[in-house]
Length: 126
Length: 225
Image (cartoon, chains in turn cyan, orange):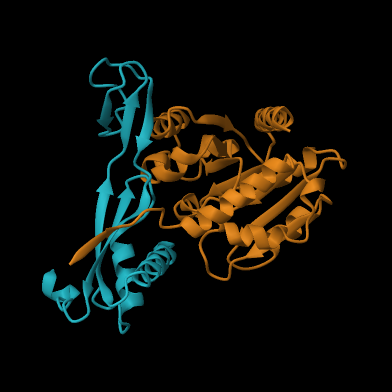
């Protein structure tokens, strides 16, 4: 349910960035979302399309990179992806590992094109 | 086509306000807890039992969030500590701006402990930093013992899990050990206390945890200032 607020925050960030690139318009915005971020991707896409529909950002695409939970071993410093909640280091079998990523909710990039060039709409690219 | 790298968090405005609140809390030595659970797990009951255990001299204040009604604030005002209701009018979580706004006419100098009861919801509140010292998740045995696996984010971010309504254990198919294991699978360092706000069992353990954490925060505050 909070995905609407998140979609709004993304749009605000896009608008802010676009203002710095005169004569362009945004085509695609990229986000990084961790599996621990409690954000539902489908719901976020739905909200994003709902609030851009009928606006000049209607053709703006949303690209989401899902980030897995990763840990670093406190003993041997190996970094590894957590699967099925198994926190044991695959290298030295230590359980002294700490979470280093997986709760991202970050802006990654914005693709902009000069006016007129960005004609591929959301529907035609999917 | 040009790709411009963007930096920062999506909720950077909330995070900025939360960082500001956290700095203010630290400057005034305020220990702040953000209580999160599903609706009906017993956050308000836990706060009632907590407030009634305090002497009237304790410098405690409560912000309690709900979508509608003043009901929780009315329940909590009986203990004569400052209580403010935050009605979000539909929003499923509290955010840092709401906290800032509702703290505006309280003097932080007069508060040692700020208890924030979030809107009943295990999902959305976990994304919004309120500047709290720690998050506490309340789970009741009337829910499923696999809740930590289904809603990992909040269990990952909470320092403590309060397992409430343990007086109901004889009547419900809730496996306490499985719930604890599930919570630790998500967050190996999470602490767990088991309480009943109805028959008051286990409350001592919760109050000790609170006291211990407040003492540690105070010691850190004094060391810094």
